[in-house]
Length: 149
Image (tube, rainbow, N blue to C red; front, side, top):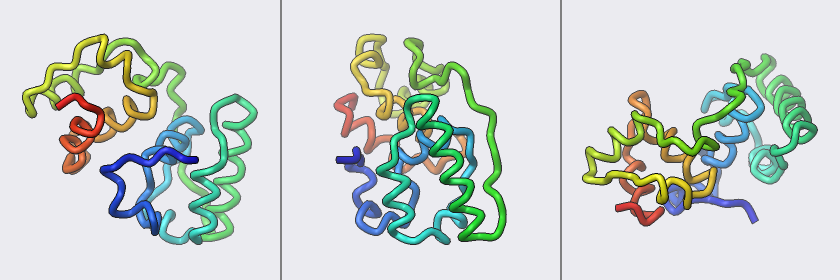
């Protein structure tokens, strides 16, 4: 069963927004998917992107090729590619500074132990939700859901 967060509950049934687990897969395989591209996908397409594995090198390559073909079929253009981070922050033992700064705005200081106890997907979500370019409305919800607030 796919992992959806409680803070995603308002769109999980319809998958009208890109869930964190797919966002993580996109970063893992180096594809930039715009919400407008996502909206061209059928619900079955979106569900497949949720379900397909993207962990091993073989899975990552297969996911990337599947997604590129899917976007080309649905939109007529290729999805933009991103550099793949060889050591992504969500797999690192160090807590990103901008994440710590954002957490402090909510009175939270993450300890290395708390960070270590989070799943990689939870870490990914916190990193994404703490970015200045993100609207951040789900950041405090994620802190609460992950028992950090």
